[in-house]
Amino acid sequence: MKSPLMLCLALMAGTAAAQEAKPHGGFSAGIEMREQATSKDLGLPIYPGAQVQRDTKDDKGAVTLGLWGGLFGVHLAVAQYRSSDSLDEVAGFYRRALAPYGKALECRADNSGKLAPQPAPGQLGCEDAEPGRDGLVLKVGSKKDQRVVAFQIKGKELHFQLVRLTARGD
Image (cartoon, rainbow, N blue to C red):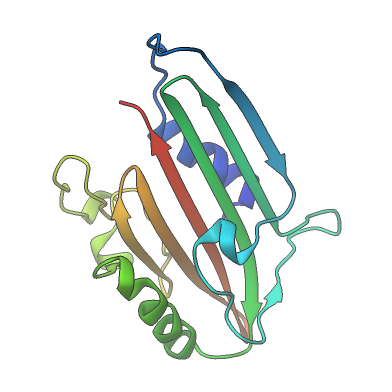
């Protein structure tokens, strides 16, 4: 799996396109960068008993980034966790957590990357998912408002990333 920061930057680059601000009584702009992501930032609960997954000793295991100006904006939160529970158990928990936002798209090795069907404009697809041979990626929402949970089995542990991406503007 990619590090939270690399995943954030890749998603932001693939989703956000700059847009000119239109005058409407003022202009505001800002940037947010935090080495944490709360359940509220992620728009999903944290799996009970999950531990923060750190790829290196300096890794915080999470990041929240935001960038906005005028009519354009993007907010991204990513956190990595690990659990000794099975993929079926943890994925079931997140299928239920994602259900209020729509039916989750399930990306596996046999329907992701080059094997993925092309999604309708603005809809999520599996073309950018990297579930690996035994992994799974759950997605719900649209290109501009999505929640993603990516799972990968590492030895006797299940590693998973929670991602929340919201964007505004064309």
